[in-house]
Length: 282
Image 1 (tube, one colour):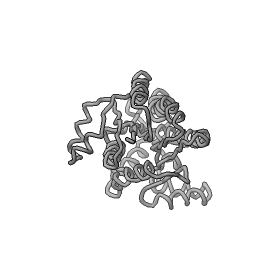
Image 2 (tube, helix red, strand yellow):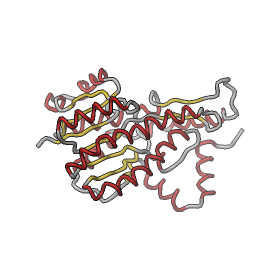
Image 3 (cartoon, one colour):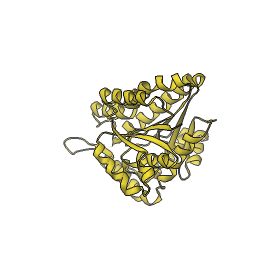
């Protein structure tokens, strides 16, 4: 029996690589993206036509309910859905005093409400077949907050809470839910996928903060991991029979970071973060 998967945000980053890895493992993948023209990128990554033929580009904007309903109709016509990978997302940076509330809403519309809408639309199909796997792509930012990224951090913290409740609700129906929490990886979310909200007049008391954060992001790029590691973790979960855990952090020194934050006093953690990211205030 053919296995079917849906991957949102499948035209770049983790979504692109996950789609390819799933196809290699024999899945038929509905690779959703806002512009299906971007699907031409797959031919530059895939050498075997049998893998390429398992990838089915499908237009979905997770902030547009009509396109989500079209996806639902497509899955209903197929008759089954084994895996849903909720990957679509982007990042907004800036400082809480200066970020427009509209920017926070924009962040949540994609990273949270869009994910919820896709999940809600496809859940009846999984529940009817009494099995399915939902893999939500979170971030270390869903567990650890950093200055200058409150829209993104807030959206990922919200996703963590939603996924925890979702797992408990769906367990009796044979549907499994997992969170994949990558650390720093070489994807475009920190370049073309990131928006920086700044004060309109250009004057900001946070300039020293912004310069230090951007410098840290730039200098840390050489230490970023290979995103294929994350794609392989997602595919391992997709093919694994049972998941014992909800959360799957992945990345260099990430487990140590999460442990340290959990066990040391907040005042110590605060000093570590501020001294590492910001240095001393001018």
